[in-house]
Image (cartoon, rainbow, N blue to C red):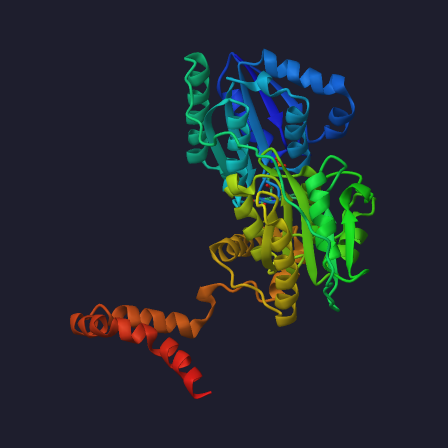
Length: 457
Ligand SMILES: Cc1cc2nc3c(=O)[nH]c(=O)nc-3n(C[C@H](O)[C@H](O)[C@H](O)COP(=O)(O)O)c2cc1C
């Protein structure tokens, strides 16, 4: 069988993910694998039709396609995302139709599921047969048990191709609707001393997005909102995944990105990201910015801010994107104010609400409590940086120590002693019976007194 591997790692062959693919290739003899390093070569692919078409020819000739990629910022690298956008922009979707595919990602298991969901939706949109998905933590392949899992899925993949097994779709096509909203002229303008920036990816074709951005800006007095269009910023490339920044938080790419990010996003009180949905995620332009912000490692690089999103596209049909937005803001220790899209007719009201709410919450210094998305995510970072990543990610380690992110629950010896003592105590039947009878009251004792104290203020 001819298997085409579409490699998402900007590191090309020297990629962790590719070693997983090689493992499968080397385990089953008699098949012909070819590789295209789309992320590494995205510049050429974008500029040259021949280059793109030669990849499409390889897809046509293949019996099966492996989408193999690292996870970058909860999705795939921006370059890979761009390649997927190109498939749609060139109307090449039908080339992928009915092909069998295997989705393989590697990561540190931080929002790997959203990356898998994204790719699954992309493949469903391309009418492919997704045979299976496999998400590995970077070094999982060291373990025999994980090698065996990979082999099982390898067999499943070949069998599905051979027997032409059809897969059930999980994601059904997005239903696009005409965007119709009117934006009135603004007479009363808002005033503030807060620094507000809009990071937009708007192009001439994105009429609805431009309208929303202009309107949001016009809600404030002249000069209070600065709009940055990422298309005008000198960003030479997407993140290379080289990790050089891990030691000193300095990116090796010589362009304006670092200074842009510091002077615009990092210095603002209120940040509004304005972009479009392309395929199943926000535009690759915005994704490039997020990936490149990795020069800050695993530290919250836009902390204590009010964040808003203005999106043109069907967010309501893409829950995965909303989950990533929620998680991103929580992990950044910032506050997601609102996400306004052009799906609603009352866009003007929603934009006004976003403006007012941002100012109010910024004045209050409000950051929403973190849910599982932020707390769970940070625990993954905490454990991995502490366990081994700190050797390379030295800046992260320093930050985590200074900001008490190493909050391991077992560190406090007194708490450990109390836990062990109570654990043993509760093995005694009479004590257990007594505790059970008082459990509900005891659990709310302190909460209740705090709530009641408000009456006597
Ligand atoms: C810019 C960047 C962003 C990343 N984002 C994530 C992430 O969101 N979740 C995660 O689990 N790992 C993340 N990683 C880690 C990579 O997914 C992981 O190291 C992967 O195995 C690298 O594969 P590769 O060598 O094939 O490129 C990120 C790495 C980089 C460089």
